[in-house]
Image 1 (cartoon, helix red, strand yellow):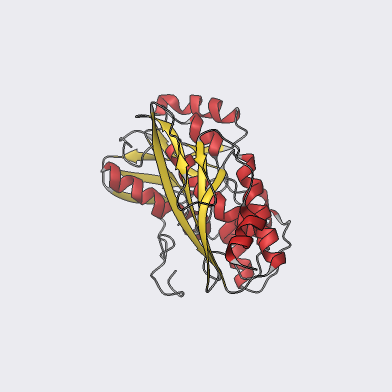
Image 2 (cartoon, helix red, strand yellow):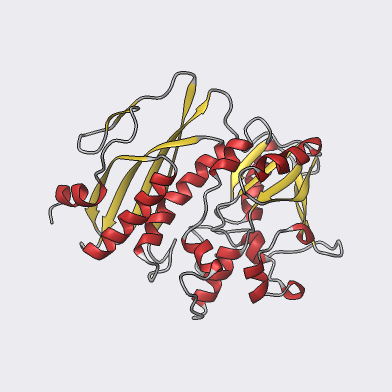
Length: 323
């Protein structure tokens, strides 16, 4: 199948929005940004064997390729609108392409996102999605802005995806419908939570490379420090079924990565309002620490002792043994 036939067959859809002046099929897309809004843009690449196990179902790969980008916009409090897709394929496999397109476009439909362009080429399997969204001018959430006394909060249950990956790498199979495996293969972008936090969170980031590492970006941008308490970290029932509370490997929820949850800070008097707003979105949220003036990140265990982690989070340029 020729390149443009492949694009037409798997990725061309009827226009959804009047803000798409020109979409798939030309040299560039033409898009209208609503008056009074700013454009939020992010891009992520997934490579087979690096960002997802080789045996991952193609529909899950398509879902995750978009979900990780949606998560970036959620962390900015932005509404997603458009994506472009650069797809590198070792060969044309109709079943894989059909599944991948279904996973990508189903999630796009759920969030009102339109595919407006991209590129296909031949080579080792990799997927790059660029996402664009809009946010009212001056309303975007940012990494800087955390202040001493702010409470640190997190959505969902960090560590599930990391535990799933640990088990898979150890040769312990997980059914695709296992709750841990679904958290790895099909993360839930917290779009409604991101919108609900506009005007409330003082700083926000999504957790992709590990909770501690990503919190470190907030601390550096804000010029502050923090203390976290492992006793307050929310762990899922599926996680605890495989790893009881008395012998939790804290590196999984603290440094495992692939969570795509929102980590954010709010003034202490606003914590109750956070719970109220996010309850309306169906998104669980927990308070896990406090921002402090003293620089650095301190993680305390259940008895208040300092916890040392072997690693802070995922790094693309470390060796496999250290990442």
